[in-house]
Amino acid sequence: MINTVRIAGVSLEESVRYGTQIEQLLLERYPGEIEHVWTRTGTAEVATDPMGLEVSDVFITLKPRA
Image (cartoon, rainbow, N blue to C red):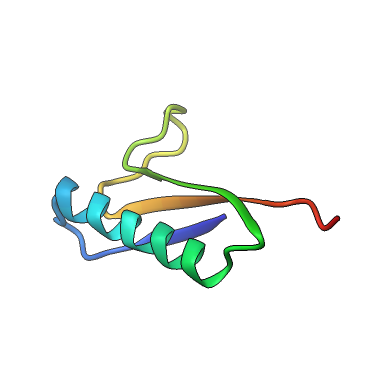
């Protein structure tokens, strides 16, 4: 997992664009290693973990070593 933080007050559109760029760069850089990559931006489902639009988590699932 990668945690990204941008300037406070960033728009949702900019956060989504930034997350998509990170996903694409990771897939291009490590094509044989990454199975799935996705980004979660903003408030989490759990109220005890508040996140603003400036915070995103990038989740990476790796391919099996074999």
